[in-house]
Length: 364
Image 1 (tube, rainbow, N blue to C red):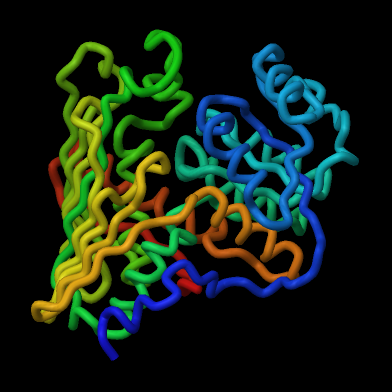
Image 2: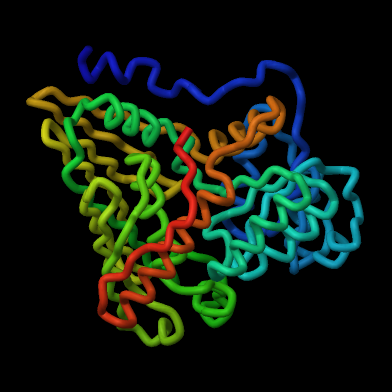
C-alpha cells in the first residue's frame, strides 16, 4: 500500500457511530471572539448540534448573538440560577481558564453534559476538581482538543501507527502569534495576561497545542521535561511571553517545541521517523488550512483540511447520541495539566522534572 492509498477518503469520519436524527442543544458559555467567529459557526455546521442559549458577562455581547442567531441570552447569574435550563442539553464552556470550574459545577448540577475548552482550568488542582465534579454528577465531560478530530491529524496518526515512516525518532513543533495585535480588546483588559485567570502565559494558551497533539500522534505521554521561559516586552510582566520545552516521551522519544505570544504567526509539527517524515504546516490555528506533507523514500503527498470546529462538535454530539464516552476526556486533560506543572517547575528551577502521570487512557 502506498502513501496515496493510505490517504484515500482523507476526510472520512472514522469515529462516526450515530445514524439517527437526534439533536444536542447547546448552551454557549462565553461570547468572546472565538465563540462568535469559530465555535458558533462550527455548531451550526455540525451534524446533530443546535446552539440555543448564549451566556456572557457582557449582556450586550450576548444579546447581539442572540438576536443574530435566534438564541436565548443569559447573564452568568441567570445561568447559575437555572434560567432556561430546559432549553439546552449540554454546555460548551469557552471562558477564561479560572472560570471553567464554576460553570462546570453548575452545569453538572443541572445534569448537563459538558464540552470544556482547554486548558481545563488555571491549575492542576482546579482541573482535578473539574473532573471529579463531572464524575460525581454522572455527566459526560469532553475537553476541547480540536486537533484530535481534525482529519489532517487523524490521518497522520494512522500513518505513524501503521509504520509508514518507520519508528518515530523525534518531533519538533512551534506555535506563535502576535497576541496583542491579533486578539480583540484593550491589552490592559486581556485576561491572558492575568496569571490568576490564565494560570500562565504562552505555555498555557498555545504551548498546549504541540504538547497535546504530540501525545495524540504518539498515543504516548511525556515522562520528563526541561524548559525555559522568558518575557521581553513590558506587557508580559506577569506571565511568560515565550517558552521552550524539551520533553522525553514514553519510548524515549525526544520532543522539542516552542511557543510565543509576541512572534510571527506560525505553527508546525514535524514528525521524523527512520523511514520518512510527516510535516503539519500550518498545524494548529483554526483560521488557517492545515497542510500535511508526507515524504517516504521519495514518494510524497500533500493534503489540506476541513473545518476543525465542525468536526469537534459533530464528534461530541455523535458520542452523546450513541451513548459512548468521548475522548479526550477529563483524565486525558489532566495529564496535560501535570505536564504543564512540571514545565513551569523546570523553568523555575533549571532542573529536569519528572511528569507526575497518575493515570493514562489509551487514544481512541
